Amino acid sequence: MALQPWTGRSDLAGLQIIRTASYTFRARLASRFRAGRVFLLGDAAHLTPPFIGQGLAAGLRDAGNLAWKLAYVLTGRAGADLLASYDTERRPHAKALVTARRDAPSRQRHRRFGGLHHGPFG
Ligand SMILES: Cc1cc2nc3c(=O)[nH]c(=O)nc-3n(C[C@H](O)[C@H](O)[C@H](O)COP(=O)(O)OP(=O)(O)OC[C@H]3O[C@@H](n4cnc5c(N)ncnc54)[C@H](O)[C@@H]3O)c2cc1C
Image: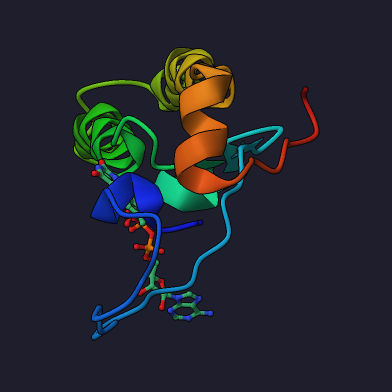
């Protein structure tokens, strides 16, 4: 019974489903976070299944990493090469988080979420 982990019951008699949400889990990482003047942040750069709730937080870290660098470069306080550090600093961290989700305890993952779609890196 798919709902048993949440209801604690082996049957659905008397239960009424009042809301559902459908989404697809993905574990994906962009091969680069920058193409010229375009920067990828958040889910556009890394998609993480929501097993330990870090997808949005990782996107905020991207913004925190990039925003001050853009401000420095645009106001002449740093050279444009500073922007290269966005990819080198953020992508390894995002990859570690995506991999951590992918490798979350499989018994718990499969019991609660019914499996995971792996990305291109593993
Ligand atoms: C079930 C579930 C639970 C989650 N729980 C957590 C949690 O507990 N903690 C956590 O940190 N994260 C969690 N996440 C992940 C989190 O929701 C995402 O990582 C986060 O919302 C990504 O933000 P984003 O701004 O990068 O992308 P999005 O929120 O996807 O925003 C992108 C926006 O761009 C818009 N858009 C797309 N294409 C275009 C276009 N061509 N033109 C204009 N607009 C466009 C979209 O409509 C959307 O509004 C969860 C995700 C799911 C599915």
